[in-house]
Amino acid sequence: MTDTTETPKFKRILLKLSGEALMGNDSYGINRQTISEIVAEVKSVVDLGVQVGVVIGGGNIFRGVAPAANGMDRAQADYMGMLATVMNGLALQDAMRVAGMVARVQSAFNIEQVVEPYIRGRAIRYLEQGRTVIFAGGTGNPFFTTDTAAALRGAEIGAEIVLKATKVDGIYTADPKKDPSATRFDRITFDEAISRNLAVMDTTAFALCRDRQLPINVFSIFKAGALKRVVLGENEGTLVYC
Image 1 (spheres, rainbow, N blue to C red):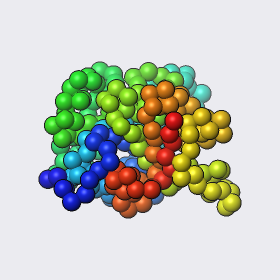
Image 2 (cartoon, rainbow, N blue to C red):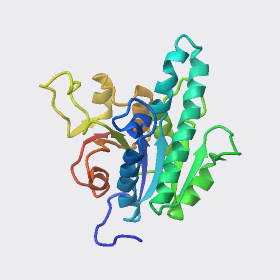
Image 3 (cartoon, rainbow, N blue to C red):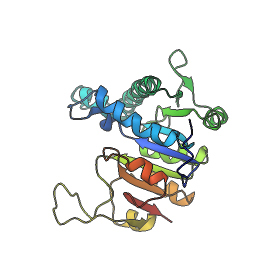
């Protein structure tokens, strides 16, 4: 049911969710309580009538097998990581089902016995029908991060903003865990973020969003209500703009 008492600033968003976010306080894997809490945050904006696409990472699963991948060919390791994102996508879809949401998982590479392939027109149709679309498999190519996949999918589906969900409540001048004097930016341009080499997203993702004039908002997914506040246009996290 759509909540008509609050008016969202954005009609369609692309949410970038890291695999590490699904771990909670565990060392790797999927923490069921954590994924349920994240889904509740996503549902709060879907209930506003916002169309939500999600790009999911795979670090929580790949971290568990990373020691075995030490010294492995980079492309081979990246394919393993892409498979991990499909596993996360399925887990996220099931958690959404439990929460009463309708979600579809699309993969950038063919694995049709498990999830459907990424087809841009079909994804947009799902979004228009009010279904959440989970984009797995990264870009389908090695050497590209899921941050780049988020920028790419956001541009392809006509999202108005990319929301980067992290464990930190925005972009800081330095790592706030290591430097207590670090300060958070409320707003920063793409060019400044790139020149400062701020590592919250990779340069390819920043450059693609800049060229498409697609803003990015970096916020903490673990801060209750933060996602909804961003969607409502409130000052939350850090806005990266042209």
